[in-house]
Length: 177
Image: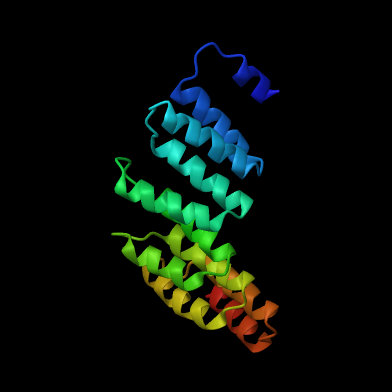
């Protein structure tokens, strides 16, 4: 339905293209989103920070990790100022793909990495059962946000997931204060 409305437009602009790119990205049609982005570039239209995020989201939601990395590098060299949201999307993409070290290096490039960036990587550690990295990240996160319950819950879940029941008990105790 949305595509038929888009195709019927007399004039295509950044807003209509962005809307379609975002819609495709959200619904797992990464390749279609990237095709529209390429069309946008060929038309000489400038991508804004929201369009850039939609392109990264398209790659993330469709498992197009290498393409996402290529786009991210080109965006870094371009005119769009990348925000923590862009970095969080990349960290999530790399993390889901098991490229945890790359994700951590990317976070370390950010001037002031926030809780979301670190917790996104911590979530990926749970998925990939990387307890060692998770424990290191937990310490960093708790420096930024002492007693952060979300982090303690993630760690508790990771320990349960990996059968470290004594550590689950410790995390629950830490949560109670």
